Image 1 (tube, helix red, strand yellow):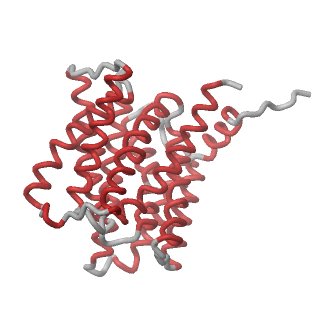
Image 2 (cartoon, rainbow, N blue to C red):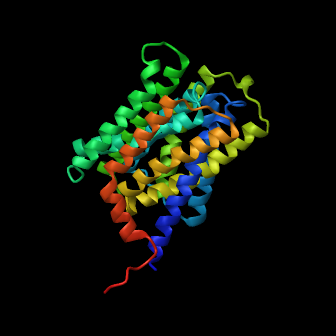
Image 3 (cartoon, rainbow, N blue to C red):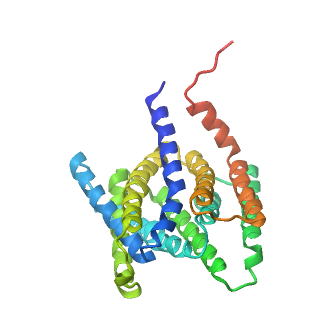
Length: 307
């Protein structure tokens, strides 16, 4: 069995499980941390670990124009502002719902790839999947569209974060140069910290932070597993399989997040949310059905018998 196949499957499992749980951990951490300081401390811990890892593995962190452009792109559009929006949004909506809303990520990638990456045009299946996804989002939003309430604000923050992160990935795929996943993560997070730190000092009150078990535990888990491990594995997977695993992860993580939210935080899902979430997940499967079947044929660790 090809060792790369095993690594790819393990990578998919790892980021699915971890990202599926981060929504819950963010929600728990917000009981002790403000959104901006929660993101800032998480990223600072991740930076320290990534720097140590780069030194240990003797990984060069390039600072040429192309590398800095990618770091700035990730720092601004993938880490800094989007993660702040996620933390702020989860103050107002459940962790499971936030994960379901974030599941439109592959649709943004599909549309952006069609517009800016000529090698990845929209086909019929992708178009139907995108349509199902946006109908699902409209279903989730329907009761809140005409109201000015916290739920609508929280859901809008998650969707804006998703749009920004999708844009960052399109730019990364279009402008990508050979940079180690560790270096890419470190550079992006460094710029993100430079963006978030002054915002936290000005907008958040440090006295509101409680360094209790929930707060410290969330920072440790999100900084190590939810940031360092997942980013390094994710950027490695992008170079190996790209859209296939991106789409499957987006399908699996909200399911994990919803289950954890219901079991641990006793979050309630309305019929409208269930229907909307089902449409979103169905859209992901429809848009990527050919890629999923190709992945099953190419990457599962078994060989067909030839007759």
